Image 1 (cartoon, rainbow, N blue to C red):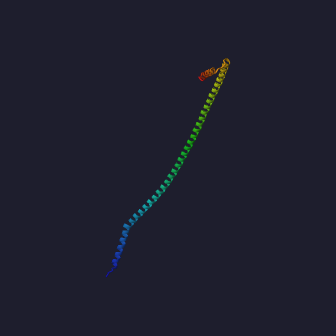
Image 2: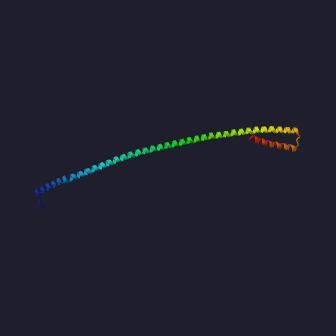
Image 3: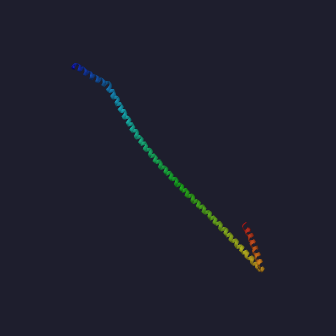
Length: 167
């Protein structure tokens, strides 16, 4: 069966312990250090990623705020331009109405002036015509043929007077 030699067991145990200590000193410590460094690097990278994420979120929020402010300013500028355009339009319409009223008033004044001239002219012509007819009636006894000649002569005379008056 098995021969158990205590000396051998002690030597094997000492060898195993020595091997364990040597391996621990040679392998376990460096491997643990590498793993610790790796763990620390991963933690550092995660913290950096978290900080970058927070910074990106802050930057995004700031840019969104700037965009909203820019939209508000653009709306204000557009509203102001529209209001100014409407004011200018109203002013142009008002000035055009004033100018049109002036033109209409001038036209009315000219029409009234021409009307008064025509009335004055007609009054003068009627007076001349009446005096001509009265003087002819007194001079001659008027026959129908003579009456037609007188009227034609007076009408021709009126045309000549009108042309003289309006030159």
